[in-house]
Image (tube, rainbow, N blue to C red; front, top):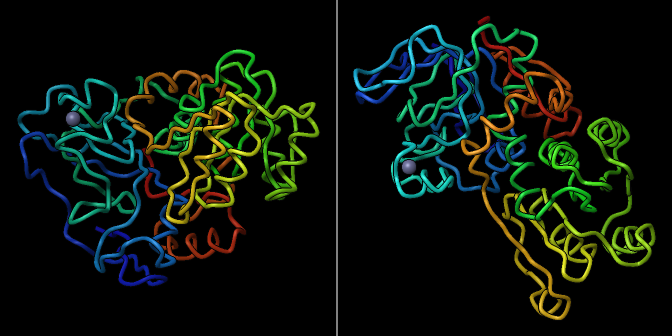
Length: 347
Ligand SMILES: [Zn+2]
């Protein structure tokens, strides 16, 4: 089969690799229908994240179960399933608490020797705990929105939950990538009364508004803090979603939170080196940082995606065939593509 393999930063090749097979009795093999490229894939591609040559790429996919191991109970060949970006057994201490990213038997696609989602098929460990079957008769035109449940929508939702977004909260979202935009959508879904999207790109700001943003702030750094304070009568917002992962984004997030407010940070923090704890102390700011246990949220978010009520599909602005995954990375890195959808096969 074809799979995307990373050889060096900037050197990604779609090439023939052995077909995946059931190895452990709890495995399934999934034929990929749709996959995509994540902003976090670019950290490795740019050489910022730790890198091991020869590893597979991609951690978001949706597809059809082809084979199941003898101990797989809840899945059968032919079922359409969506995979979160990490596999998990669904039974350990952490999985039972809804923190599947800490699963004692878990892992992330493309790490170590595991398969990646940017491929024609994937061996899925702990299939029962990991995969979420889609309802019978799920329309094909909804699948792109469902694919966003692999990562970006649950991650935006996690940021909102960590920031304490609830009915009538005032919210600001730092970062206008797919996760930030999904953070806007998740905040709207949770009933926020005001959502300030921080974006200087017109097309991304337009998606943010479509997702429920009430205000757009284009400024950055200290100017952004001043602008948000200006439009909130000087008090800032209750909840801030930090979806970038840089020192500047973290400083902005803390700066625009109201005293007693809370920041939920999901930006992968490769470029966060300082956090102003003194400011957090004097202004009673809360900060929660964490990788989203996407698996914990998929069932909750799925009905709203299937009904189209809260549909993240506008984050996918360009589609590519599997063979053009390297071009998709280049386009996302150049910011000419917001989030690349990769069409692999038909369901
Ligand atoms: Zn577990």
